[in-house]
Length: 285
Image 1 (spheres, rainbow, N blue to C red):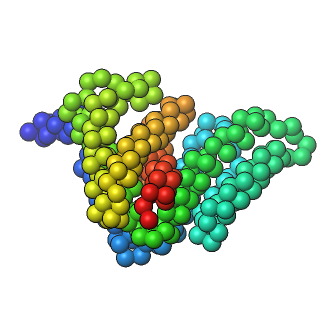
Image 2: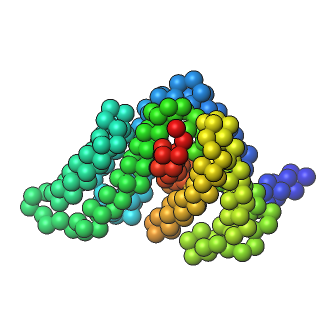
Image 3: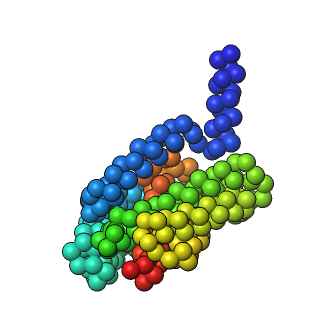
């Protein structure tokens, strides 16, 4: 009996590709905490985002250094935090200035990382990778901070999160039940066109209803948000999949049971925050 039960659990995990009960439990806790913040203290999202960016940056740096890609830690950590916090104090102009300054600092820092007497090795590769990390994690994360500061900012972020959740749930359900045709097998073998169709359907419904009900915005704005966020969230997931494939790893970390690391959850949320800011700022008053 025990063997049969273990086999059933293993089968469930093999089809889902992860520990489903743990993934659901962690998702409920994270989602519930985020919901409380967005409903009762929206601006608290900014320090939460700062912590998430720090953790995500740590995971990425650790994985890169394991692969002997020597990105400079201090400029990435400090620059990332400056980008997030200036989004609160100085808006988009502050984000642009902080990002530019951080990128310049990274390039110079990496030039002398091996000391004044040793010639730099792989300087171009490591500098370019560092700036990629700066864009991927803190710069995109800053747009969640910018979005939450707008009128009804908590609901605006909630609309983006709902679309991302609909993308994940719709894609997962359709992929598990109907997935037969791989989408991009060279990058992410488990993604299927059927799953993408499920994501698109759920994303459109979630985006349309959330923008209409939460922001009293036009239906077309919600539909646009849903469609674009599904594409962007999918591409964000593929980018992280290729990142991990290049490094030969399965997950970015282990802090979230059933999910992996923080970046395994932020991979689609970070670019989605940027897209939500771009779409909702002009389309929803």
